Length: 188
Image (tube, rainbow, N blue to C red):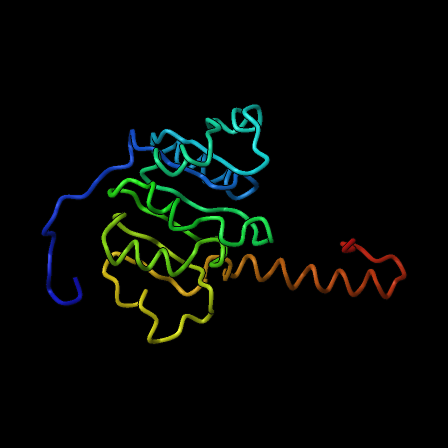
């Protein structure tokens, strides 16, 4: 648009497509709600997800393999830990539909970045939308920056005025409570 261009292809809708959610916690369950609002079939997998918990969120629990093979859009919402580091490997990426889109706004190291670059470079999936990277900020010469099927943002998912207001208010409350001898929000 900035260069004077206009539509040259046909887009795809979300209605009837399958939204796969890796991690159905606080954020993942909200994403499921949005997916359902668009008429998407929602499926989810995580290491401890039960069919009952999935059903509570209007989602069908599936195996990890099903998550990757059935999803049209696969979105990641897990915390980074020893269990989730490298959770998405070349094998999982290779199991995805060539028309699929991977979204990672969780943590970069959850996805094998080298395998993701290779997958995108060879068109094995349609695209990836990524807000998190192994190295942040993403180096200027990183190969992801040059791939036309990679939509990149600079880890801005949590950088909002509302969230920062909460962070700073909580910090002030924490200091006041500590000085009063009644600490709050203790870390075990």
